[in-house]
Image (cartoon, rainbow, N blue to C red; front, side):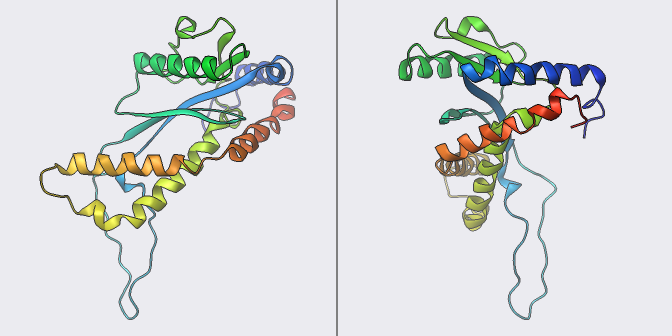
Length: 225
């Protein structure tokens, strides 16, 4: 746990966010945006040896290149996601603009607020890229991952990626001709991401959003969290 998580000023910012969440926040459609990363060595690290043979683990010191996923969800489901090799402020603003455009087309006139934390790429998010005047941006309180439901979405996503890569272990370790190992593994990661995102259901996102509210009272009371 970060040492700054329960500083007095952080608790006050968290309390302010909790007040917003249970008042104005309930009148808006909340869209949570965040990023995560994974690589080919995030597959499950357990298994069984053949009968009569000792169990041994093969590992590598090289974890491989990370692939980043940016995603947006609301209580109504997964809205949009994409893969990026790097996420800097321009990439994030492009993603924010695309999500705002989709929301504007699918639910015209809706009062939408896009929420995200203060990661470097997200701290320079621009209101100007939003597609509609009734769309706004808001930053989550610092050191408060429990107020970011998309963290739970990413947990399910990564579990799906791990399962896919475990099933495709032989494919992962065998590079076809005419393609580099890096390209081959990245293609598998992209496929794994797509398969895993297909399993993110609306009911999941609704539950993640509800869980968010279970932390409000503790934040209002300025408790350690």
